[in-house]
Structure formats: C-alpha cells, structure tokens
Image 1 (cartoon, rainbow, N blue to C red):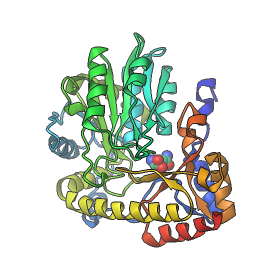
Image 2 (tube, protein in one colour; image 1 turned 90 degrees about the vertical axis):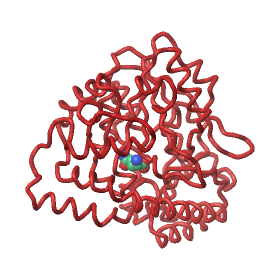
Image 3 (cartoon, protein in one colour; image 1 turned 120 degrees about the horizontal axis):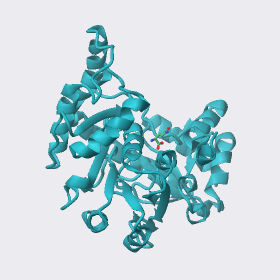
Image 4 (cartoon, rainbow, N blue to C red; image 1 turned 180 degrees about the vertical axis):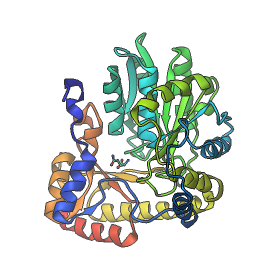
Length: 384
Ligand code: GLN
C-alpha cells in the first residue's frame, strides 16, 4: 500500500462489524438500518430488473432520476439543470471522492471539520492534497458540538481550495444553524473557495431542526457541489445511489473523475430511487418520527446505563461520554464492548486528527428495531 493511503488500510466500520459478528454482539457501530425502505421503491427496482433495465445507464445517470433529483433540490429553492448540473454516483462516498479528484490539485489544502466521516480524509489523500482539520467545539451548557468560526478562519490560507461540510453531522448529530452556515459561506466567498457538502442525512432532522443546504446562501450556488443520496433517506444503504449537484463546470469535473472510477452504477436502482424521491417523502416523514423516538429510547437507555449522552438534532447517531463509567478512553472501551457485554459502538477519536480531544466519546447508531435497541441497552447496564 502506498504511504499516503497507509492510514486508511481498514475502516473502523469493517473492523467493528467483523468483531461484532464474530462474537454475536448487537451492532450499534456501523450505521445502517435493519428494516427496508418504502415497498413501492423496492417493487420499482424488481420491476426494473424484470423490464431489462440491466445494462449501463447513461454516464451522468438515468435521465428520469436526474430529473427527480433536480425536482427534489427545488424544495430548497435551488435549481439544477438535470442534463448538465446533476450527476448520479455510487453513493455519496463516490460523489465526494470524484468531486475532490476532479477539482483539487495535489499539494492544495482541503479543510475538513472534525470529527469527520472517515472517507473524507482518505479521498483527500487520494488526490494528493493536504487536509486542514478544524475541531467542532462543545457548548459546555448544552453539550452540542458547534462550529468554531475563528478556527475555521485560521485554517484557511492561500493554498486552500475547498471546504468539505457535512450537515446533519455524522457522528455528533449536530445540524448546523443558518448562522454557522453563513460564517462558512462568508469565508468561502472571501477566499474564493469551493464548498463540498455532504447532506446525506438531510431528511433525518428532529425537534424542528431545519436542514439548510449551504448552496442556498448568498454567493454559494456558483461554488458549491451539493452531495446527497438515497441510502439514508430511503433505508437502502446497499444500493449505493448518490448524487452531486452544482454548476455545469463543477459537475463536469466530478463526472470526469467518476467515469474512470466506476463509469456508471446501479441501473435498476436508479428508476426506483426516482420513484421514491417523487412519491415516498411521506414515508420518509414517518421514518423521521420513528428515528426521533428511537433516539430518545437509546439516549435514555444510555443515560440509565451511566453514560453522559450528548444531544442529537439529526442523523441516526448519538454520542456518549464514557468517563462517568470510569473509562477515560472510548476506543479502549469500544474494542472491549463486543466481547465483554455483546454490544458494538465506534470510538469518535478515529474520525479526528486530535484523538486526545475526542477520547472520551463513542458513537451509537439508533437506526435499529426497538427490540434490538432494548437488547443493547439491557446489555449496556452490565457495565456499571
Ligand atoms: N455511514 C455509515 C456510518 O457512519 C456506514 C459507514 C460504513 O460502513 N462505511 O456508520
């Protein structure tokens, strides 16, 4: 393995899921739902296969899906030409990698906010660029992790090409406020930066938290590649249907890279996702209500088991402080948990460049059936 990819040899999700399976642990480590998406979407995929939609789709993606994606983005007031400003990808992960590969030159800087989803750092490394990492800061009153605008400003220099922002934010559950996004936008405009946004949890917001796409802020539409996907919205993470939207120039750059990474992807799933985007947002509303309830169920259980639980306004993850249970290092605890009590979680520090700042936090996924959450909670009580 080449040196620049050596830190990325194995993902925490693969390792923790393998350990969980080996010892029969309840897996709240890897974030994927254990129930299926809307029935009409599943039927549409089966129908597409039966109808012979099994060969390469067009390079930028199924035209009807691109149209549906553009219609879906219009709910935020952003308008994209489905022919030139929308690209279908193998999940948001490929959209992020292709966007970086198409737009960032080796030696340039890309700003990441930590904790960051692991693929961001790996994708930046693949381009040969350098990451500049800005830590979220915890509000001592509420426990919410918010943007440190001064630190973001300090991380931007003449070599900076892009800022990658994820909201709703994995793993903290933060949904960035309009004021935080305005600060990001102002810096992007002032320094002529590209913004790349990962909005895969856009529909999974709770308690009235509003998802605001960065591209909707003044001066941002022309410099933002907005990335999202179907996996989190429609419980189909294994379909790997994602997308990137932006100006024709930005999307063409991502497309140039995408065509040599995977060429195209998921032909029969694409019309099914188009159906879901058009007709199943009501189903998603219901999912959102269920997830808010599951968040409360798991958070209460974790608190009873002795963790100090941080607030979560979006995504399907909740972070918990392990120190009240006497564990200073969350990673150490996560590696013990599956064998000791039969539960898997992931340490937050692995998503950072400053593990010491994040040592005490571990992440649990709550996108699981209630009986699975209850079993995990019961087992976690054995820790105290
Ligand atoms: N995005 C999911 C998570 O954060 C799954 C990631 C993965 O398995 N690579 O848990």
